[in-house]
Length: 62
Image (cartoon, rainbow, N blue to C red; front, side, top):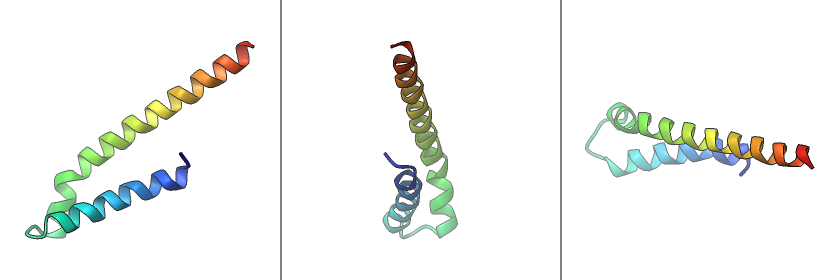
């Protein structure tokens, strides 16, 4: 996946959360789920880095 797509994904998740929890203030909505979004993004990024390292190691060993 492209980096620009991955940067837009968290923004869309935040917008979705705001629309879903209409009875909370914007600040409360972001605060409630921001940590979870960051954790998921961090895990995705770590996995992508591992995949890149594994494919470069396989390519280098050939």
